[in-house]
Length: 532
Image (tube, rainbow, N blue to C red; front, side, top):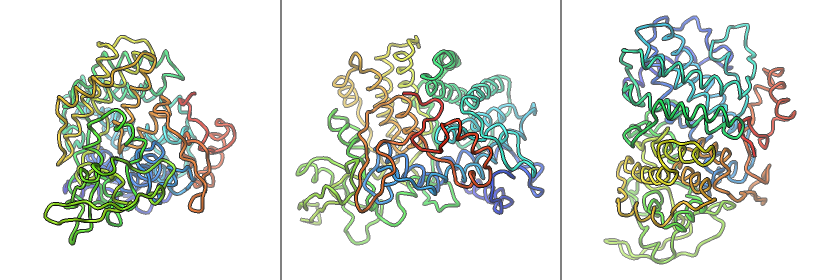
């Protein structure tokens, strides 16, 4: 990670004066022989290591929208649907200026180089992965121009249709798979898989599966074709294939990316303030007797002298014995639905009072550690997606829907052991949960996608995309009106709005894209693949 920090800093120096992503590839000071593997590593590391994106897109907008996290004052923008242009613009302005710039340049530098076939394949896959998050959040975006580089006279890129972007995604993945097959070069500095090409092939196919399901309502025939291609090429087969970033034990600022960006966002300003686990998720755990409740959400006492994030005292059992398990309601701040103080006994300390804020469940310490891994795409997700495809599209994918569903649950529970300090869930507990919660006829898609919703915890962008795609779980509205918030929608928004800078500096192309959405850049409009 120290090696990456040095190169990231050196690579960013020429870009610090850029104020518009349009001039991204016209830098006379840019190195002519920069190792593209460093650029790929930068894009990989920053995807989950960026506190800027994990805070604004994740903690403030999407995690509250999908009712994973609730209660903090800043959660109102996602939780209660209150527009904030700065937060909605963050992903666009950050990614086009930095992530896109690096990964596009890496792919261009390694293209047509017989000694960098595997590297070019990785660059193409990461490019698809980076752009997919952007288009799924906004809809139509600059893509083809961004992929070929701008000139000083081309500062107003067109917004490409999301349908065309997705079609190219599949072409890029096709090219990558062919390059993996013919390439012999070692991919250095690889954050995701340390250069293991066999795992990159599985990730590429599993990413194809994710994208294909995204378009299943809009283009079912194409979705079937792409899903079968993914299955034939070979998707993830076990938790050993999970694509994750294993972060350092480092509290990031806004310019470093080696620690977990979501953890850094949560830890800003001391103990977690109002950020709590949403009751929608807690009640799902309670109602199904899900053992993940004990691993993912805990109560902590942090009033002892010298308390730190790591040495806070776990008081979950004492609290649960008196009042049960609950978080914050989807329509509440942490100070709403006030809970009366209780007294508990803490070993070696004695009786202590526990008030409202500490009674409401927090994200557990292992999940919000600085070195907590970030799961980009998991084996559990792959099994759930295959299960969805068997029901939704009637495909035969090597196992029954029920077996795929069971495999997904077991993998999702076992992957929690990758969090440092996490208590593994026993096989007996997993088997009991599966036995108690079988697939029910007519409710398969709801159950499968509810499990995906749980699996995406702390990956708000993917959770938000899948809730929109599948319609599950059926989340109640977080809409509220009071003196603390001024919501702009009565239902969960379907996208986020473009930056005002595009309206001002790229007006013609901005207007054309907005016309395709009905004439208004509104967050209740749906992106192309998002059909009712």
